[in-house]
Image 1 (cartoon, rainbow, N blue to C red):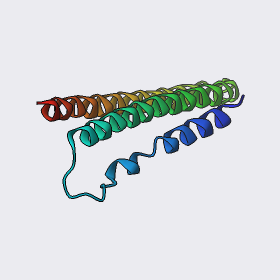
Image 2: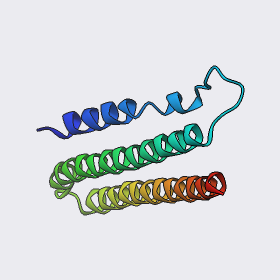
Image 3: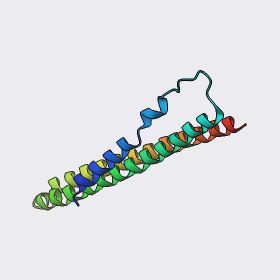
Length: 124
């Protein structure tokens, strides 16, 4: 399976999480505790799916970069200056991907912590 197909599948997985459904409000004015707990459970599942999908997407991006880097380095090996520049560029892109992964992890961890705190408040 190609990296492109893998990333495409992960995007579809993220869409299937349907996080927008969490914003739907029931027809009744009062919201029951079980309804809130159900919404919190849906939210946790959505956050987990978002985290997993983005991790897989970043892994796919890293794989694409590795494949492209090999070809670029092969072509640049004829010129030492070009080879060094290509290696610097590849390193910068890989660092950017790694930073983006860390940011997504931090963001989803923060969302998970907030959902946990909200769930505990609802349970009281």
